Image: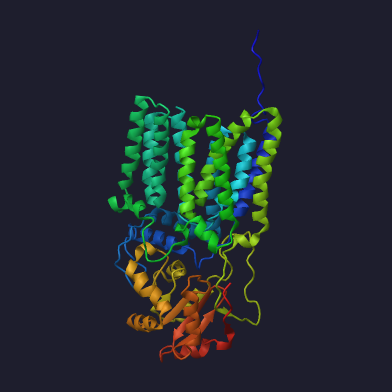
Length: 545
């Protein structure tokens, strides 16, 4: 008697090709809408990256010191993303900021498509589509134009190469050459270069547990050694290769992107953090079912990978995007396997649950548009304007936020001179606008480029303690205060209030929706003060929260 063939619960990829093309095209549009965000140049790192690239083009070498600052100009700093700066510089030079936005949108889209392409090798395209829709808001958690966007692309390429090698679709020697070249490029583009060998190492350990053959063990070892050691081919050599070991160092200044999800949830009301927790729960339930079904060994490489990137995301929110990208193929593969194991009676309700719950979470996030902007709970210094001078920024747009460069235009056109005392957030903005000028910054948003005592003993105390302010403002001969008005650190807003109230020594001469500028009351500054001084009654304090 012939063995009865039991049909699968559903057919794989049964959608018509035309419908599939339309749906995936709509997904690309949907993805781009999440990434189309205006650039707030006052707080973005992009301005500094562009000038880093310009410096390399002009001098033939990357900046390796605290070049932009007058406070610690010789402090050594490994420039681990100099090549990204060159790319951003040329894109900005040829296509301006609007083109830079579109470049990053397309870069991010292509990176996501690599993970989706990998997922389509492992799972039904409807499940992959569901995962992509559900995870797009998390992938777009960090929409600012950053070098790490290039890391997402290179991580996707690494994953595809590793998958092709494991399926014996890519010969060992070719894999070795491609991985080696990829790592040489990656270490010069961004600090996340260590993720390539890390991903390979996790698959190696998983395959060892599953009984890897000796020839393959030798190949894996060679791949790991070569892909790790070629990282020394960067301008800083061994120091550049070892830079990832310092990523969580104490800088003397707290980096928001290096904080845990639970730390951020207590301080910021963003749907993405709860979204990430839900994703982790969903994946944990899926892995639990694999263990119950006793097929976990088959999925050991994926379990190791999702555990690593999930842990990274929970430890530092800068890892959320990578966790979401990795979750597309791995989540789709796990869900696809579990649905195939269900009987016809349980398949439909299970599929409905898998479909509805993520879409409900996603809808809640989309309806709460306020969560897509930075939460500003400490506007202690505001200004009253007789009319609304600045047009509102559309939620979905590209290029710079309108009028974001007004304070730089004012500073340069008036001819006001430094030294400047600026806050951490605005450093990249000042670097972009003052590059090639005599004036340098007090501090910028590269904590690794300054010593810990600088932040703990000088920068922060200058804003917390009026005695320290007087001491160091005289030491550095501060002539201008130029601040991002919405600095949320505990010391910034009280400092600005003190300067507004210190009318005898400091005159506010410029304020807009982004920045505020004070001039020291000196005979040299008197002509500018007489012309531009703002009345004190323009300013008011508002309660925290």
